[in-house]
Length: 347
Image (cartoon, rainbow, N blue to C red; front, side):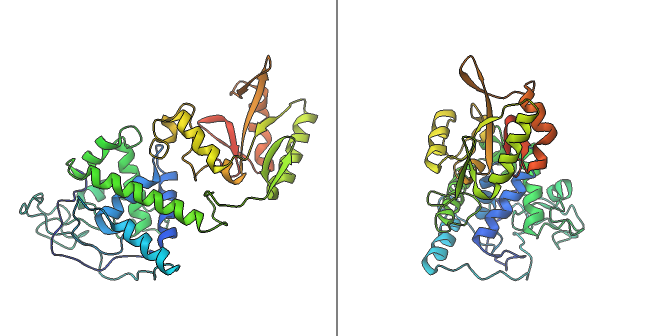
């Protein structure tokens, strides 16, 4: 059984645990998505958590026709040019009793009150509003503190990511959301929150030139290494790698940095939707603008020339074999699904 939004009612409580600010929260969703067992869009996590709990800040009844939580938070952040104060752990977020009234599910106690504090009826718990039996099935200790805690945003996001992958969110988001909530009533509202959290991320990137993920105004100091543009701080390692490969009789050619605008153009060419389509569903796979290592000069796509025509390297090419044996010595790692793509993170 999935999580259900059919819990809302006059039962607000204080938010739980350790949310620092908007940027840190977005990064937590991104970390959870990166660790997921499928190619999960991190913004889906943000969309769900934003809808059900205002990203773990406070539990409030939500009108599915007016999803404004992330927009409101972003507006506050930009208006004051400061991060919201950290939310101190207090009363854990608990949904209304699932008593079958006012459109809610009827779920009699499944956990002896251990998870939700109610020994008669179940309540949804934490920033992702897991029903206790769903949490029991997908409980995750994502932050490695030895406790799988549904009130901890990292743990809850990790569990949500695994559950969404099981529901096929990387293949068909609408069906996965219906499976998550047990109804398609909230699909549109969650999709609106997904768009809002992605927009929040883009605006935060644009406001911070030092952001890890490149936004339209991010500044990257580049160096040309054998025709490959990379960040200047990795240029020496890349140069040494090209020399070592040449000594071993392997010529490495590649393309490195690309602009944010070029990333958008590639997504438009390769994907059904620039911002929504999962990278794995593009042909060829193409990262969502603002998430590509190419945009910050930390990724290289290696290619070979066949009769003068450029093609991406394959696993049976000597370039791939050489990189597999030596690239890590120079700080580059392969994205397993793309033999041509090597970066400082392997992502």
